[in-house]
Length: 110
Image (tube, rainbow, N blue to C red; front, side, top):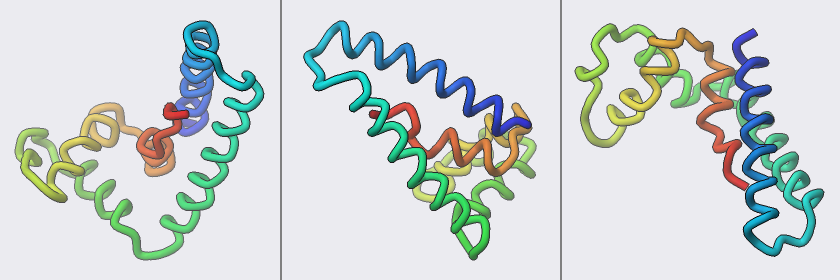
């Protein structure tokens, strides 16, 4: 359920961003921007399914960040910084693996 809510939120934010972008810059067309978003979403979905089915670092990032109680104990460089970034979504908001992957897939970048 949380993945569906995150997806709907990203669609609303993306709609707003595309409208602002179209008003401010000369883009080819609005449908072109939506096509870029759709292709990116499909590729992210394929990778998420692959990562969930195999041994992936993202599963470890999710497990460690969701089980750590103190956010600042995750502060650091390299891999620990990824734990630190994902902690609010996995522990504080209690989002699942799929919803967290949707957020970190960069879906808001066109």
